[in-house]
Amino acid sequence: STIGAALTGVRAATSTSGPGFSLMVEGLGWAGMNEVPIVITYYQRGGPSTGLPTRGSQSDLLFTLYASHGEFPRIVLASGDHVEAFYDAIEAFNLAERYQTPVIHLLDKFLANSIVTLPPPDLSAIGIDRGQLAYETSKDYKRFDVSNPISLRVVLGANTIMWYTGDEHNELGHIDEDPENREKMYRKRMEKLKIADEEIPMEKRLAYYGPEDADALLVGWGFTKRVAIDASRILSEKGVRSAYLHIKMFSPFPSKKIEEILSRFDKSKIIAIDHSYLSQISKAILVNTGVKIVKEIVKYTGRPVYLNELVEGVLRILEGEDRVVLTYGP
Image 1 (cartoon, rainbow, N blue to C red):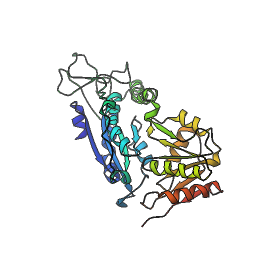
Image 2: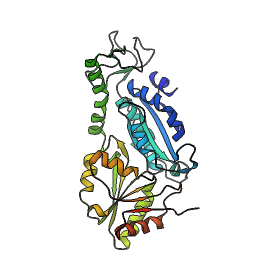
Image 3: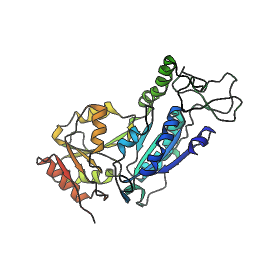
């Protein structure tokens, strides 16, 4: 299994779409409890159930953020194009091992099933970070040492003994339900997100395209990136100075920076774009910043957002509509 492989010290990943991930969430929780660095590449498609297995969607964002019972840290990053997907795939492993936590790499079927021609990637920009990993240690080694939220990770087969269990455990890994132990182990795990939030550069978490003093702001993620950037350009040519805020990381969420960007715009000129009925990106922003986006353009037919319909949708919003549902496409 992916978890077992990761415990031996190799970089381990699996990939799936919605139904497969639904079956994985108990294992995801086990990995979270035991601080196992795994990567799950998640290709979103239309649901629920079998849904639209050959069509795209962005309706699993909230699911990936809260999947499995209980609380544990996870990193969720989402690629917006093929270049981002290439570098994010590498970064996902670095983040998983640096913070010893599951990483979910979110894609959608629009991106996963499309083909583009690109120049060769810049390999000099790629680095490998294996975090606090060791192949041998002392006999008194504590896998879950609470002196640091990110403790030394020694691989299975090293010159020591370690215990892993789905139950709450102490620093050695032995089952321990003592309330004092529970509090410090729980806090140890959860504080990783605070560290990640402080360390991960903002350019890896969001991108802003367009003039700083734009009149209207489009907000999106994933495959909406390209069409939203193009729509912003066309709108600007039509006299509506527009910009696009592209969110690339949803956990830890770049709350302060996004709140600062949104505060520069009139709420009637902030428009969320999402391939889901609920406009899940709006919900994620509300939960993490307290800012409610009141204007939204959604599409949930399984077809991608097309440029002309997006431009038209934005103009309708700016003329007073609160919600535009797009349906174009065979």
